[in-house]
Structures are given as C-alpha cells and as structure tokens.
Length: 297
Image (cartoon, rainbow, N blue to C red; front, side):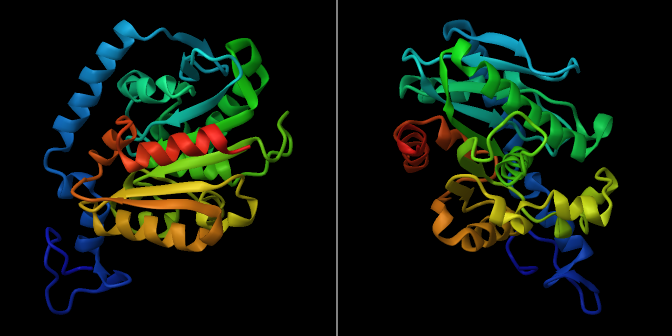
C-alpha cells in the first residue's frame, strides 16, 4: 500500500508503523484531500445544492437534547408512517453542519422515506465518546417522537459519511440498555467512506486531535462489536479513496459476511464524490439504500 499512487514514497530504513505503512504514508492514507484535490470544491457543491433544497423542500428543525448543538432538520415524506433515515454527517469529527447535507433529502423523500439530518457537537468541544452519546440521544428522541412527525418508529435507518459513517456504525452496534429503546431499533445502516477500526486511525496524524484511552478506542471501534449489530448494513466507498479508507471498508464488509446487504465500490469516485451517489436516484448505491429502507422490517 505504501507504493500506491499519490502516497509519499518510503525510503530505505523508514520504520513501519502499521501494516506496510511508514508514518508518512499512514498519515497520507488518512488524509482524504491527499487523494481528492477537488475535495473542497465538492464540499462547496454540497452547500450550494443544499441551499436550493432548503428553499424548495419543506422541513422543520427540532432540538433533541440539552446542548445547542443537538438539533436536527426533519424532511417529511408525503406518506404517513414512512420509514425514516437518520443522516450523520462527516467532517473528521471536528467540522460540518446539518445545513450542508440537505441535498441528500429529495431523493429519499421522493421515494417515500422521511429524512432527519443531525447536528451534534465537535470532537474538540466534547470528545468522541460524548459525540456518540449525542447521536444515540438523537435516535432515542426520534423514536419517541416519530409518530408525531409522521414516521414509523419501527422503521428507523441510519446513514453516514466519513466520520459520520463511523458514528453510524457505532450506533448500529451499540447496546441500548439504559435508554428507552428496543435493542433492534435500527433496522439497517448505510456507511459511505467510513472508518470502523480506530486503532490505525490513532496511529496516524489524527491522534493530534483525537484523545481516547485504549478502552474508549476499542469501545468506539464498531468492527469489534459486530455481535451487537442491528439490521443489515450497506458499505460503500469510492475507487479513488485513500488506501486506508478502501481497506477499512473492505475489511468491515468482509467481517459482516451475510449481515452486509451489499458492498458498493463506486468507480471513479473519491471520498467526497461518493456521497453524491446517494443523492442520485439512478445510481446503484441510491437504489440499494432505498430498497433497504422501503423493504426491511
């Protein structure tokens, strides 16, 4: 992997820190922009498309927790008792907001699926364990309020991209004891360009802003908690992702075995572009996600 196109070339004598990665090559393998020079332009397109959607598509904003960060935008489907997709955005756990991701709603709403796009605190303000608890709190609030919103509490799904895919997988594999939720509340999950084992992540430059004990690291690595997985899972990644984002997705899907509904390798897409596939009803990824959410019980 350290010889993959775009990675800094290792020199003789460089120490390997993980698999066949030196520190420099592992750092590059967890830097999405290293492999996606157009990444900031794609994110700008997220914003532009979302601004237009928010002008045209009805939605309401709700608070699901005590923090000012704990809010969500709810885009209702026309049908009552619709399935509901909870979208968890990415941004390295330290940036992004729900307003950027409204562009995902129309494709799902048109298919008869309501959408809740979450906001939550950043890792710098509350830490990763608290972020995971905020997402769990959002699911609990949605479950308790779904009927008044017009959605079916028995058909709640998750979707997430990048660090949001990690949080989605953490949520799909969590133990719900202590919360007012059934263990099987999540009926299925869609993870795009995610990280599912934090061990190599914390060997990379990202350890500079992710502070976790070994116990917390393992508790927040969904690949270690597959026995608790709730519902089938779709794993997707782009062919132009970094080698580590590709390896993590392939390894996670392989570990899931028959519990992974499908794995999508989106040809020609980098880390940022793969999310656009979910917003396009004509793509295999969007079709798989819609089929899952409409038919899984």
